[in-house]
Image (cartoon, rainbow, N blue to C red; front, top):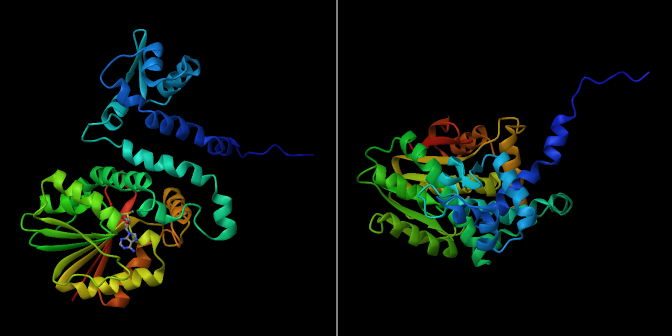
Length: 335
Ligand SMILES: C[S@@+](CC[C@H](N)C(=O)[O-])C[C@H]1O[C@@H](n2cnc3c(N)ncnc32)[C@H](O)[C@@H]1O
């Protein structure tokens, strides 16, 4: 006799259809729906005309967005919810739409996970988002900027850089963290080093902050270039997840050399637990990196602290970022 199972299949159904909701959100963002609504109340017909969409199934699409918390029904029409009004309407300082466009670019790439598992290669060559494809590169860099703006205030508050004067931001991307840290710590200047196509976009972001004299976006391949010397802080944010243990160690060794005595190295990234079995977000993030970068992965704080010690850093410590951010910091000091 078959015994009734006590295990519910609900998680399987939820995960098997999880992409439905992602697709609704990413599509709404891509067609500019939240920005088109803005502060107004819209009807199905009005929105169909404005965005050149078919009224069927737009009505269902809008009601689905209501069910997911992105729109609200008002009178005979729809308005943005507080969530989409704050983060998904272009022009708002808290706008995250560019970060969503990067997720949208990766949507078809996740459909090629099997290919990456079979061939051991990223389904999307990372060169595409680091200069080769200008539009994807722009989405990637502005996506990092959106994300860093959201998290940067917590990072700038959590990190005590009082009295520090020269920051080297290795793989600084949009230079957003450099800008936020320089703004928060008077007397601090930064050099944010990245690949040429990324630096070109970073320069416009630095100008937008009005920090052109204090934050210098410089070109440099962190594997090949020698790092500028004379720093008292080196920040490696969000770049270890595209590197092997050997190259992380080498970046830390170059960072050690680029620091003055007493200098601080900071690695900021999504981290796995010591056994590399969770949290689930970190493990999915690692796969996202495997899909988009040769050797993309997720490391643990323990591993990074160990590599720091191997190259000579002391007093290493790890600190989780304040919720809701899944990242952590690992700090080390040059004796
Ligand atoms: C995920 S982003 C992190 C950017 C930024 N530090 C942040 O936390 O927002 C990783 C950055 O590393 C840069 N990068 C990747 N390979 C590089 C290399 N060989 N030399 C310099 N930068 C590189 C990428 O262009 C990208 O800007």
